[in-house]
Image (cartoon, rainbow, N blue to C red):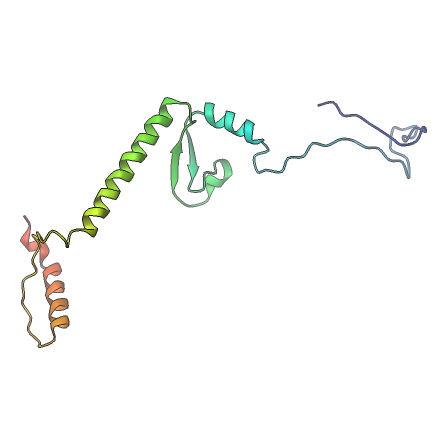
Length: 146
């Protein structure tokens, strides 16, 4: 972008050495952007749509942000085949997790608990007995491998 020099008076604001004289003013346009990567929303969407695979942190930042500790994730542009594969894997992962959570939440309803804890302790307090029985069951689970 060419720089334009504008000054208010008809006098030359520079002295014989080419230095701005005392009290002289010069205006130079400066384009500033108000985002972290300096791109507009349209430019960002074009970049993301055509971008190859890249590694980002948990917040979607790349570059110097990857020097901080934390998880790293692989991303791809929205119009690439890699993006479709990543979206499908993410969908399958979420679906499997949702099924697992639903099974855990409704396990008590079907009454088919195949994991019975042996009743070993009898202290007179039912809550304490249940706790001691579960601790004993968990600590000896390695010996009952199936």
